[in-house]
Image (cartoon, rainbow, N blue to C red; front, side, top):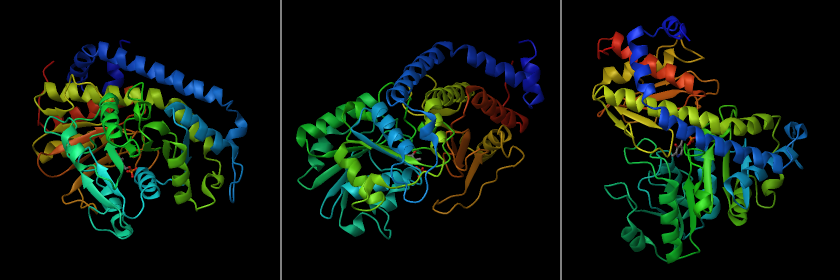
Length: 429
Ligand SMILES: *Cc1c(COP(=O)(O)O)cnc(C)c1O
């Protein structure tokens, strides 16, 4: 081990920064052990589902055209249903991304006159146009689906009284977003989500409870579908794709909800029976198999970053000791030069495009410049080490992913090194 620090030096990390990181790492042993235990449990959960469904190399074969009788696809959907403990699942490369999967889950299960109620405040940015919160062509609103929202209480808890008052006879579906996304509220634990779902069902058991599960999969040993959710939805270029899936989304849930989603994704009458997979199935299976350990690595990275930057006096969300329910870490720097330096460091640690220097730019759909660091094998993949920061107060950077803990660690050390090199902080050995 004596030359480990030499390897770090070779990759551009100074002795001081390395030692600073080692000190933090040493204090995290217990938490890392707890994360490993969750990963171990989830590894067995995934393995059992693969074995139960007798997954074999025949399932990795490519289908083309209509994709009738795609054994690999149908079996993978059963594997997902077994992992999420749902009646059925839709897991497809034709679900383009998380937003698309959510749009399908919503638009297939809501009809004109129905109301969608979000009980965890404003949904993820990209859903605003899907729902019609921001006017858009083809939104749910355009189709006569109304929307209402109950914000979380200032302490981040569900507003049960507000939820009771907001539910009426047209309330067809409630939406809960597990991850804080790019907000500063706390992420919701599966247990809390379960209590809110039970409350909603006690008012009207017919209401469909849908959870946006993005960034949450495999962080805990249970998923929202274990506590009553009728549908859980996510992206395969985040947690459940394990870094190997190059595209895709999933919806797991009740037979009725999934059938409707499949009819909306392909066509009424065709549903799940079509959709060729073109040889992509092995990456879906293998990525899922790796996902529990990949998520564990990303979680360790997030906790390491929180502890490093909190110890240097910055506000971190979640903080250095909070329990974790998703893989996102926010660091509030208060000044733009820190955000830029942080992202440069992350980029410099990437396995792909490490020579690129990220710059703030005017990204479509954002009201400020944004800087992004991503040197990923899969474009836009945020289970891979990535960071982005809007150049506006409070000058926060959002950091997530890392296919291995060692890579996440290197990325964070590189971010710190960049900040140190620019003379913005000093670390004392
Ligand atoms: C990423 C994300 C989405 C949307 O996913 P895309 O794949 O980027 O379309 C939706 N909700 C949450 C909470 C997310 O983190």
